[in-house]
Image (cartoon, rainbow, N blue to C red; front, side):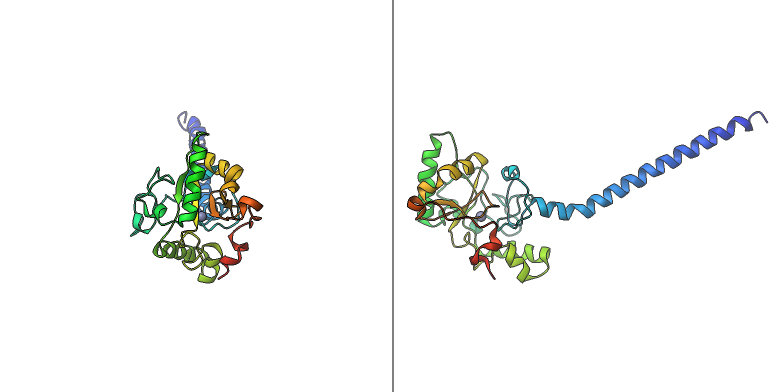
Amino acid sequence: MTASAPERPTTRRVVRILVVGLLVVIAAIAAARGYQVLAPSSSTAAAPTDVLRSQHREVPPSTAPSIDVPRTEPRVRGEPRGALGEADGAIPDGTTVFAGRVPGVANLDPALLGALRRAATDAASDGVTFYVDSGWRSRTYQEQLLREAVSKYGSKKEAARWVATPATSAHVSGDAVDIGHTDATRWLSDHGRRYGLCQIYGNEPWHYELRREAVDQGCPSMYADPTRDPRMQP
Ligand SMILES: [Zn+2]
């Protein structure tokens, strides 16, 4: 008799603890599920399609599309991703615009590369180094980016709005370069026009192309994002 009386509250307390514990577990599972559900859309918002790397995380998140390799994904860089290696335009870590033997740099349009190297030489006296995140890319590389975009956006037509095709990509033709790090893109933003180097897309502060007329006239107005670029229309 005496034993059963104190037992009740104890049992009740145990049950209460179990219930609370169960609720915590359920909440945790719900939170995890919620995160999984949210993750793709939030990563889409924070990470334009065609971006490559961590330095660019300082760039404010944008929902605008980007023609560069997804920067939240591991960079292609020196380590081949799938079948892709340096021969397809993967860029080893620490590659600068002066790297002569890296195809991703060496296959850039000579006029663009010359302008980049002149600018980089002058930037060096300000203590700034121009690293190359992505330069020339093979059609195979671009096709892989496009394939990834097709699986993401559901159709080739839609994907082509977000990721350049091998036919439309300025990287494939060697006419575009993605520059890092942030100090370099900031330097180019301030001084690039003197070398004919212009940012083309508002949402891609790292993507530069040569616009020779910029030396005299200044850079042309930027497109907000690649979907506004007539060259990108499929
Ligand atoms: Zn680019």
